Length: 275
Length: 320
Image 1 (cartoon, one colour):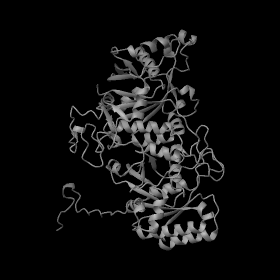
Image 2 (image 1 turned 90 degrees about the vertical axis):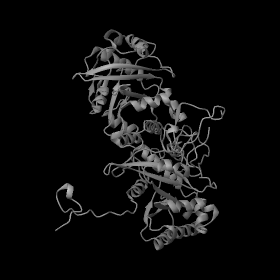
Image 3 (image 1 turned 180 degrees about the vertical axis):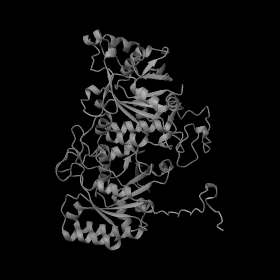
Image 4 (image 1 turned 120 degrees about the horizontal axis):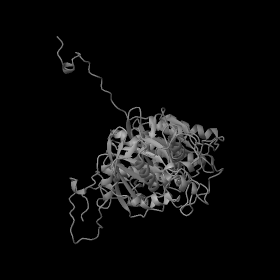
């Protein structure tokens, strides 16, 4: 892997493939901060997603065992070249890594060689359970239930994932500056209905994860993303999408809360941080 | 496959506790793969040296590798709310409702343990919250340890904290007999804690057996006072929403203050007083802030006086 590779992290259903397909299209079109300089080695992982979007449908689910690295040579407006290794995999790989507490060797080398990680979180997918502080109960006494099923909260699971990757990447004891750069991308921003900056959204929905990210990484970039711009169905066509083309949909929410239609911005910011 | 010879390391069942991802690079590892032993499944996966559950003594090496963690000993009779206190802190951290003074949550190697402690205080589908189940008294020599790291932005440094989750019976035995066999775990807490919290249960002090509850607490206070060796101690009234008589409150306070005049006093409860958007209970945040502000006794060396402005001859130059 080249020096400038970005490791994409995200559980299943956060929209990795959609982002990849939309990003690929923008890179090829070349009107954003980054453009493709050459051609990607392998477009197979995105073939069906690109096709579905062309027809105004949502892409299908990526199979668990799939892991195909697609190398994208990109260049920014100033002419800086970088190679983007865009992995596409079933998000269950991440989930099973967390539950089995084992990190496959292939992932270890991936983690070690990537100087920047991009973590995709779909806030709508995370539960934020009620507890006695948010919803007090008059009298707790005598209500002891001995056997409860232990459910790990979503933010604890994500923190554990990041801790595992930091450990495997060999940066557990290091200082902030020694760790890979971290970008957090809050996907499906359109369904969130949140008025404010992405950092504030993360702070509100997953406060412990937000604190962990802030205390563990130096200047993490937190952005929002709506890769499709609107919800699509896997079965019914969105005629507007078909007629205007998917490249006219989707936006990024910059750290200051402003929207931009340039989907390459999150990558560009991470690459900038590496220089 | 041979086991690691280090007692605290369970390789190859878990990851190496010295942090080597590749076991063959570890100087302590002598295990060799013998082709005919098939009892251990060989995988090309990296195992992690922490399980996420509450830490035991064997796990300490991994957490304490960075620096000696601050151990917060929570002592008190059974059913006093020691585990609830821990669970409540974790929930408050999870809600971001902790107004920590220039500190930030920076991870934990016992997240599953924390979730287990806090789980019963959550609303689950079909289940209202309740207090955590009784911490069972095992014949352990050390309590379960829950780990938290806090990042101090001002000092640019991470400090590790270990909170003890010990059954109350240990402290009852220990307060009666310092060397009692059942109190071995309480002895461990008393020997290693950097901060001691003495938990007074207002429910027990208002109930039918308030006389014996007071007596037990007074005994425990005297034991803590005898063993504290100048470490900071706080008297923590749990379930502060419950009224107790003035005489009882005074006599407990006197038992603590009489032997430890510098003991701090906190009242905590998970029941918030007054409605508000961010319910944080009573006193929980203040107590956590007090704990986080504590530093181990340390020496500050005087800075040597420079005799010259030249960096090469700044120190040790002879003054003529």
